[in-house]
Length: 569
Image (cartoon, rainbow, N blue to C red; front, side, top):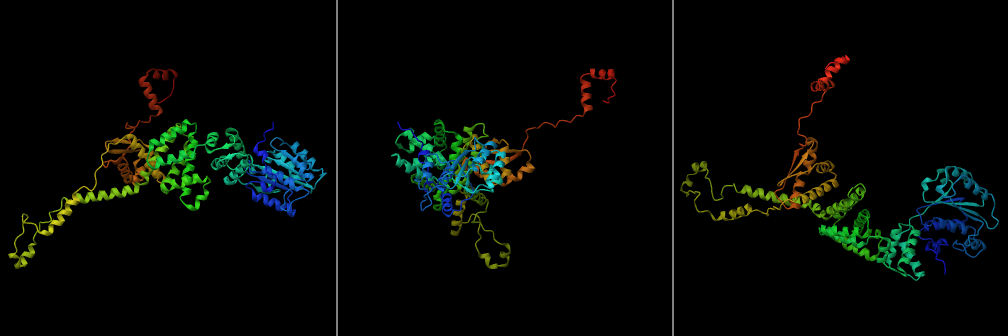
């Protein structure tokens, strides 16, 4: 039975052209070899699994190749290349600094450097995880690295560049490796699947690439795991099941529930997610990313930033059209705050459910300016209607006494009294007057539910916090509110300091509560906190305390006299 070889080793790149996603490094190295501009020391740094050690081995093999191709690649046929394949090359040495990081290990390496190559042109020393060397080992290695023999080349690889001494960095030619793009990684996995006769869905391969977070070695390990789990067919469903990843559909359904203010549906979806074994924090993080992706889809120019399959991209585009930019920006802010405060919350499930509640009723907060404007107009119409009721009737005219005295021709004019028949012109004003007196809207009088009131109160507080009104936000969230019928009272500990902040949002808060709670009689007032109404206690001196003790316990006076203490009570 043939031994199984993991994909990371079986399909490890053997030439510069087969390295995935690091063309800026491989092109520079090939040109250096062709032009014979090789530095004495190289430093390859970057995240894990992106090809640092692989490029170091390819560079070492290509330097000693006896028959380079026109493209600057190793021939893989000469004696040096064949010896490299068999791991029997005397000109290439590898040292793992993670387990060989002492001064003695570096001294042994320096002794080997003194011996020139017996076959080939150069001796190449690859030191992996070089940041693990001790300070003493770095100092012992410094002189050799600065002035190595002409035939020696050092290739250092590390994932933590900041831990290397500046004196070492200054003597190396530094190459920064990038995280491998999801598209490049998915294409590489697809080519391996084709070679292994495995049927793989594009969405599944993209999901593996996303989960790998830029590391090709991690992607290949997950690829092998899913092949072992599902056989010769890799489907999207089996991939999310094996990798324990939340399906995109959960986030799409959750956002639809937010857009329709269907809070029960959002809570049920979250409960289902928890029952499937997913962590609430991971769900919140995924929700933030989902809102970000919807924002990306709002502009066709930024859709390229969405690294998902074509089918998922269409779903994002459809849902982005249903969502307003203001909703998505506020939703990202709320979800991000939930992410930051999750670990400090003692009731994590309740913390997420409150976040879902805010998101479900976010549209009401976003429509607050329109509601305020509408309520203002209605209030003005009501005032005009009230004022019109006290105006004098339009069919009454009061004659001017001065005109009657000065104009004798008016004496023959019939006198108009209040009971006279109104003129035809008065009919139109009377109709307009009746229309103005009529109530322009229906007054709402829905009973106030305490839980709903508190929810809308917190929602409004988050809105003004996002607007930068932190003083008012602190006052709204620091004191318990008192509900007295339709009057909502907020007690303030220091009304002189806090009242100016409340004054800025008083009208907006009142209109918000009236609109969302459907009760136009709600009034919002502030009072002075009266939690401690007792008379402040007097501060007693030591003499006062002693006098009280003597009044209560006369034995203290006897003790004073017995001991002869000179104390003035």
